[in-house]
Length: 180
Image 1 (cartoon, one colour):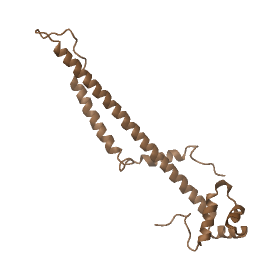
Image 2 (cartoon, one colour; image 1 turned 45 degrees about the vertical axis):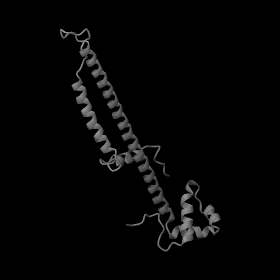
Image 3 (tube, helix red, strand yellow; image 1 turned 60 degrees about the vertical axis):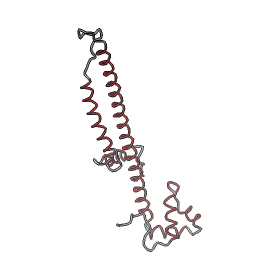
Image 4 (spheres, rainbow, N blue to C red; image 1 turned 60 degrees about the horizontal axis):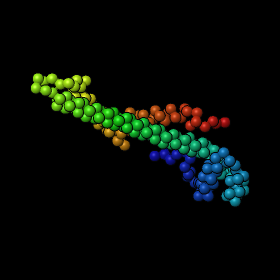
């Protein structure tokens, strides 16, 4: 595997590599004069090392890599949050279905208990059957199984959703820095 462009170069001494990392990490306050002061070396030496080992190109590569990595982490966190929200919503639907099923069962029990010898009741039969609720419960359980399967760590990005989120986030003004 080819090392990233910003990694230590062949022939780059430890002191030169250290100087590069310090210079790279200075960010917007980056200056050869400040680097020379930190390294206790002449400014001319810093310029020579910079030219010899292509520091500016390597810094640009590092910043692109760093930004992409941060955006990917943000996209993964968003995808996890979205799936978690979906799972909570489906759980809430299941709770409502179970509550409704219990309520309907109670209504039917009351209806049948109130029945007189003629088979008549003063209470109206409940609207909707428990069978339709049971059908809904089966569909809900199937849906929950799919969500559990989908939300496992191995499957969260089965359809490339994270890559799509990365592209969206890269194009958001707050996640991309102006260059110039």
